Length: 315
Ligand code: UTP
Image (cartoon, rainbow, N blue to C red; front, side, top):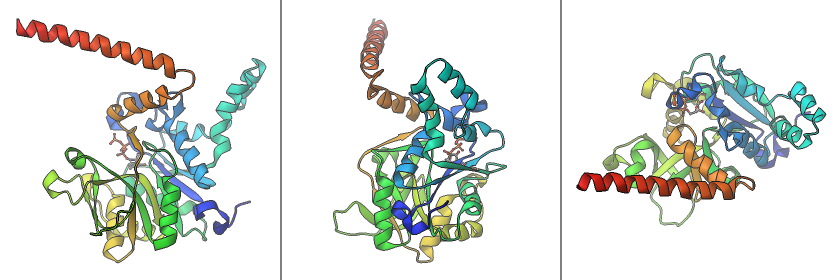
């Protein structure tokens, strides 16, 4: 039985997880393995997102997948054969581990036949929403925003101001050209919440309206689906979610950001994925201490090799 929306914690029933992209920055691994299933230590990124969605109080994970990425949904199904084998071998802890994804939340598949963009992917999720859902959360599975809890803060902000709420992190000036950057209303308040006037995708340093960059966490009013139907393909010929949000802002829909103070890991490319694995690995109760020693040794070896190269260049 499904709970009415006002009985859901934070009034979010569905979290949309777009996972139908090609993952080209991770080739060749993503030729056959969906990016969302790459492990952070031992747990796929999408399971970490499912845990965050469940913590928010959502009960449905609408996973947007591509026809050739069936493994993403399979991760949220029970695997009775594997469970039986593990039981026979007395590995009950591991049975719990493999059941976790299915137990966390109900995964609902939505197929995106072609990767026509994040906006297109999110738009497809409307078909699985109930009539009483006037808000939907979107969490990108390649973005880890830590510690978790920012969505709860975003839900408080929506309860206060209405409209849609996004998450931002402050990036260095040198990094603004890598992200979607928010243009915010000038205010003097020292608050973690700002009203958004617009968004610029990957601006040059001199054109950046702020240093607040979008992360993969969105709390969107249901009006987003209507806006997504009205936009045309933008950057890269894809339907962009930010264009639909921009359209809503132009039409007077309130959009705020919550400025997150914690960590963020971008699992979408090796350069962000490797530090995420190191970070999670160092905090891991089994592997942490050993990994710390291994990293120290690897660093020492690299530094020694660099010194030899530098010395030979001086000679
Ligand atoms: P990204 O641009 O980070 O993912 O999209 P990508 O397209 O898979 O990666 P690259 O650029 O080729 O390396 C952000 C999220 O949106 C999903 C992706 O799966 C990712 O989780 N997405 C993107 C879709 O579901 N459908 C799309 O058409 C595009």
